[in-house]
Length: 103
Image (cartoon, rainbow, N blue to C red; front, side):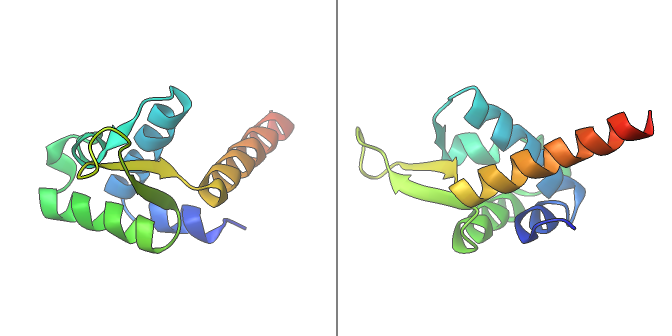
């Protein structure tokens, strides 16, 4: 059974693409501003408004954290929450296990 956080991000192609890109940037330890986060997925997948809505909804649901930059307090920085990291890693590992056992 998939965790709620992953159900949210697998609701459509844009959200899934965003999740994969966002988690990759996190693993690479890149700081993600709002503009950077919404630019992770090509514009052909969603309008600017949709991209902002998904980001803000993920923050509201507790999957992504939003904080002020230590350098510029007006700038918002985004990171996956511990819940999303845990769900993402556990689900990824379960897929790998399922694939290796069926091979």
